[in-house]
Length: 310
Image 1 (spheres, one colour):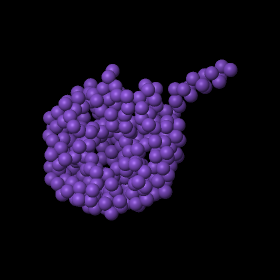
Image 2: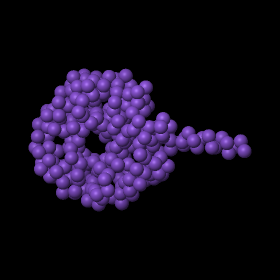
Image 3: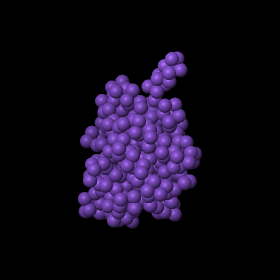
Image 4: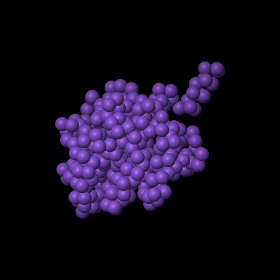
């Protein structure tokens, strides 16, 4: 396998990880998790979204979270903004990096954004202009990029058309998301390889959900295709509220553990990250979807075997 020597992880736990939880974390609890993530070495954190509180109540305190973040540390704090009103609130709260999105699935876009994909894209002209006016960095995302519960398959040419629109707006970082958790490694490799060749000067962020247990295989396939930027969530928390039977994200600590074992650099201290992931489970009141939190590190297993044999 031709794999990179280093990858970057964008921590999605504070937004995607918490948006589906019954227990709503306070501002202080979220900031405590964020502080722990920064101490562990995370440099890219999705810290909240500026959506309607009546639709995603767990994100209602995102403005206060962003107001209290230290934006001078070199850590990028990413805010999801679904519309112009959300962007205006993000600007007021001091956000420096915002994300807009559209779904490759028409049905999902209607459920997630309450508008058609065409309406979402048309509204982004003004949103991008306002973000640039205030000096904000912009990311864009394509959800349901590998398949949808409604349309099932998503043609790669359709993804290309959406990427083309974003590129024409000067957006260079594009998130490709397996929102429904239906992707397979061969599909991820073919899709990302084709997008890499079609749009070579683009930073791709691959966001994989582990709904059917193959997200780590998909991550490796993405790496083999040349992707070096991935989203993951502490304790494997998360999932889209508007997708039937949604399960969690790929656990950040699982990814870091695998990378450590493969001698691929992440810049993240695994032991500190594990402590934050355990804290997240305690705060939400249940176990997540993390193998490392259940089984421990491979090195711990060896030490336990030696201890029992002594």
